[in-house]
Length: 89
Ligand SMILES: CC(C)(COP(=O)(O)OP(=O)(O)OC[C@H]1O[C@@H](n2cnc3c(N)ncnc32)[C@H](O)[C@@H]1OP(=O)(O)O)[C@@H](O)C(=O)NCCC(=O)NCCS
Image 1 (spheres, rainbow, N blue to C red):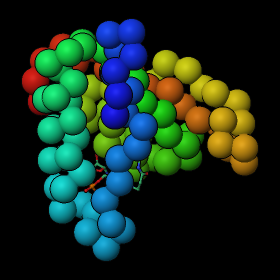
Image 2: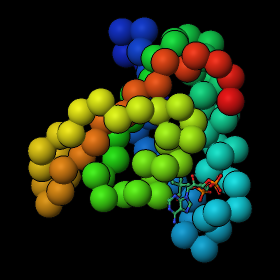
Image 3: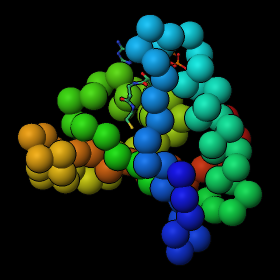
C-alpha cells in the first residue's frame, strides 16, 4: 500500500490459495485499513472485473466500484474501487 496526495492505494492483497476463506485476508485488510486511517480518509484499489470473490471481499470492507477500466489487465477489464474509510471495520 502507499499514500499519494493524501489518498491511499492498496496495490494488492493475497492469501495462499489453500488457506483462503479462513479469515486471514480480513485480518490483513483490517490492519491495512487501520494504518491507512492514520493518514488518509480515502483509499483506492483495483481488481479484475471477473474476480467476484475479491470484489465481494472488498465490498465487505466498504469499497464501492467507481470505474471500469478497459483492458487494464491486457486480457481483461479492471474495476476501480474506492472507500471513504468512514468508520473502523
Ligand atoms: C481476496 C482474498 C485476499 C481474500 O482472502 P481470504 O483469506 O480468503 O478472506 P477471508 O477468509 O478473510 O474472507 C472471505 C471473504 O471473501 C469473500 N468470498 C469468499 N468466497 C467467495 C465466493 N465464492 N464468492 C464471493 N465472495 C466470496 C466473502 O466476502 C468472504 O467473506 P464472508 O466469509 O464474510 O462472506 C483471497 O481470496 C485471495 O488471495 N485471492 C487471490 C488474490 C486476489 O484476487 N486478490 C485481490 C486482488 S488484488
